[in-house]
Image (cartoon, rainbow, N blue to C red):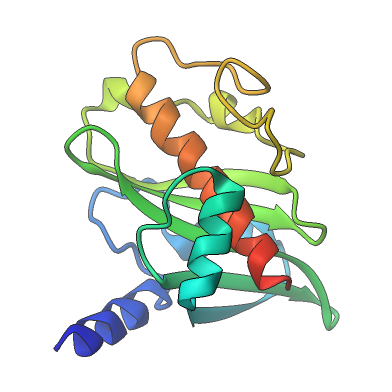
Length: 175
């Protein structure tokens, strides 16, 4: 039964539609904006126990699921980047981020595809823009390379953890 539920969830994740209602942009729109003209290859990946441990150690935060939705972007047959979906609870409700990486594994952009908390807790696109060019290291934390978010601390913490997870998973998978 658990396997059937996981497989259903995987199909929904890779369908290009939001898993959670209330999205700001569909995944298809966000991917098209991130990789104009590129061919997008959706993948559902099941991390091994070892990969989960490695990614958690690199990220410094737990990896809550072995199921990973990744979208690889190809332009003229060349990999130009990828994107990971991270859906998580902010305070009591969910947020879904599409974390877009360039071909070298640095953050290219972050798109919010769902945010079910009250709108006043949502981070601005300018706040997310500070992640551009960032890689996974000890400085990729609030109060270091990332400015905190006044009035929406839980959103900032959840988003930073999501970015760290995506970068760690990407490194473990070694595209």
